[in-house]
Image (spheres, rainbow over the protein chains, first blue to last red):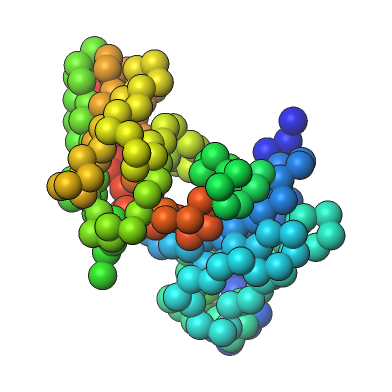
Length: 116
Length: 112
């Protein structure tokens, strides 16, 4: 079975540009979350989507947006890129949310974004 | 304001000995805690979890202990193996499957 897949794996952008990152969850998983991991720190929560609806949002500016499609895949968009947006962006999927969820997140390998 | 802290950035242990990784949290609303392991160029992988209604959970060589009054949890690995060398993240949440708060990680090196 395929795990969580993310694309692209690496990309370089310049300040002010826009980026779209993509994620396909594990088959059958309905929830997708996005995390940002800056070097030397733990992953920081950006968004969670479940059944195409936003269920949670972390402390990130409005330049960050996301959506989930009917097939449960997801996109993370970042506008007006800043140097500080350089990070590893991790997508994670889980089967459910709420009390039915085991709490375990399954992570992809991440998309490493470098902003010059 | 770090809600989940891992005060040891790194830890070195001899193969076969016990590894103890520590984690402290400040938010008393957290009710579920997880440990993730991360190898270079890979995403974090789930290792073990514990609910706040328990004080211990064991899975093979891995045991997690939770002390709610001290807001402290620890991961014990016995015996440690070279393949355990990785960065270990402690994570906490107060609503299953939503906002997980991660600590900064501890890099474990198991020396042969």
